[in-house]
Length: 307
Image (cartoon, rainbow, N blue to C red; front, top):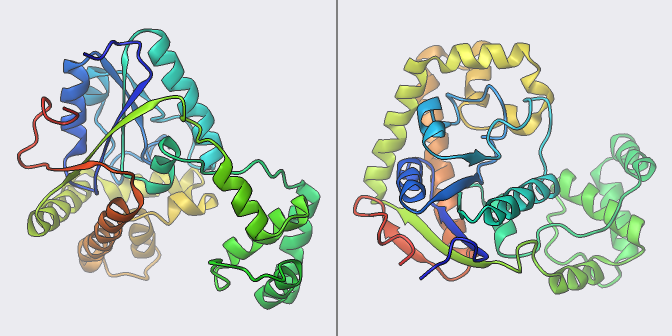
């Protein structure tokens, strides 16, 4: 038997459109639980239709945490997410209720199983210096400097990705360590929820059914006013947050509003990119999650999720 104040995290994940929301609500209602969102777009106020955010009535059924916590111009990162999630989880447990983490954003989800961010502090001045060098001399110059600082090689670093190269150089310069040394230190860190026991379930569906559900969701979003929502968010500064503006549903609608995508092709483009995301998510869940059970969402019941 699980006591309400035990340090246990119930984590329910699965790809987009698999059916996490309703099942999570039903499990939380039946088990005196509160929901902690692990969806990288539900943080943002106003991003409702394009994220399939739970409706007001659904949010009212169960207390939710980390939903609508910042404006679209306010960037979220994993360090900030972990601090907020940890505070929410500890508060829920202190009130003798259960915790249900739900969402499909892999990087944030990983925080519940392993370390996700090191403690290397990068001074603002150094960050600005490296960014200036990148803009002046290009990516190759940064890779060359990294190689000089890492005579043993750069390991799995994607040297064609400017963001990752910049971040790697910042960390090496700030710490005086090689990437290999930083990676070894990182692997020895405890995860931010290492003192909690995790029960993990991953929902999935037949591929054709998941494809159909994803397409139907896109149609529902457009009928519900996705284009108008994107217009409002652009006026509020959406494009100052590249992660939010570049998310599926929003980037295609922006392209349509700018004349770069015909209106008649909008639904098909969003559906195509959603299918690609689902494929990526399913691969990530299969290869990156710790041992877990995969449940057919079409047959899932709340009594079998974590049993």
